[in-house]
Figure 1: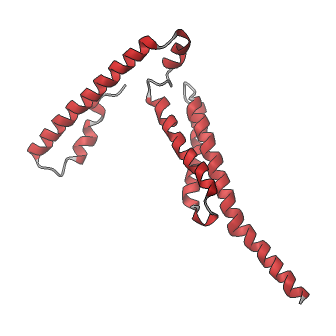
Figure 2 (figure 1 turned 180 degrees about the vertical axis):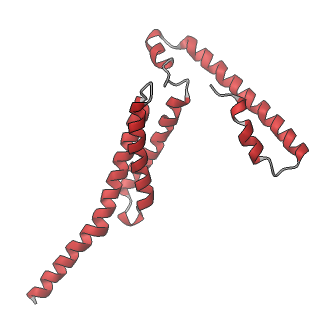
Figure 3 (figure 1 turned 180 degrees about the horizontal axis):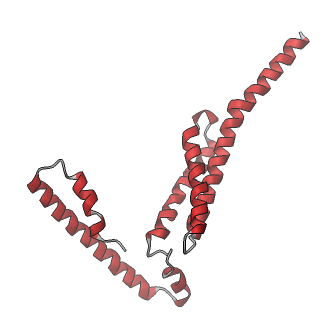
Length: 164
């Protein structure tokens, strides 16, 4: 559940460079805004609680269901995998080794973690497997073009020199 107490330390560190009265005013306004957003969120969740059918109740009330961050974080993480799939059309020169290594490692680490935690988070597992798969595929594309296609060209050039 979202609470305004989670945001106060972050807000305080951001506003530490501002004068004390301005900081107090901005902190008060921010807390009021956060409380308002939380109230609206809870009201909508309560409304959806009543609307969910009995078949959806198990999913809706699951510890990794739509009421929690454990559902929404992996759901939005799909954007990274979709963007990486869209990058399949990019030429290999524009693929970044560090970026793809991070995507692949993140996918591998989090897919393992999603099966260790309780309850198991299948949404996190599936997006992590997709991330590691797309990252490894992009790395293999880049390495094939950078290292192996050059060796083939050199071998072809050497064979041409031998024939001449």
